[in-house]
Image (cartoon, rainbow, N blue to C red):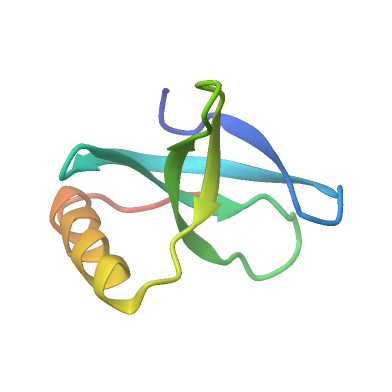
Length: 88
């Protein structure tokens, strides 16, 4: 997935939300995306999402909520983006 790609996610309520991919990485065999919500004119929020597969192999992403996992992945993204200025 290319940085800057806009991806659509569907919430549990069935609402579609657009996110802009800033960076992606793998950690311990799991793929993670650093995304910004793609709401123009409002303050943007960064989220870390984890790729998950269901029993049929269909891929989806969910927001990382575990504090331990979030801290580990956030540190990797910080290192990857250390010399990068984000322009949205």
